[in-house]
Image (cartoon, rainbow, N blue to C red):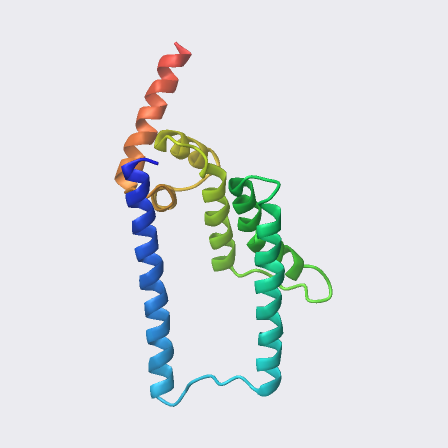
Amino acid sequence: MSVMDNMMRQHRWALDERRRFLTELESLALRLRGRAIAPSGRELRALAVVGALLLVGGNGCVVWAERTVTSGLTALIVATVPLWMAGLAALPPARERLPARGVIGLVLVFGYIAVKDLERREDRVRVLSRLGYGNREIASICDTTPLTVAVMKSNLKKKKRKGDK
């Protein structure tokens, strides 16, 4: 693993921790204002069942699967869970439509999955631009700036023109 990969992982971890901290801070603020959301006994029971199933079923299946397939493939399969959930929610009888923000989130996640195993940033930019992503979305997936993405796209176009001649 390169130093850059290690730095990127540490950066992502720090962002996750900040996001978790802000969520907890918001929850604390709601509780202090007296507007905390308290689940009923029935909801707590349902939450306990779902939590146990996620822990035993979800993590247990992942551990069992990693005995026969690589962890990269397992991670790829686990990363498709949001797509399955959105697809199942769209089926009858619920027929829930995914809001625009949900669609954008799914597109970003699956764009990341599509380029996860590509090592060179230029390859990632090329694939994502072919999939129709904008510079800002590509920059967030590739941990760079939109300006850098624009320069990479320009360079890729120049290389393509040279290859066509």
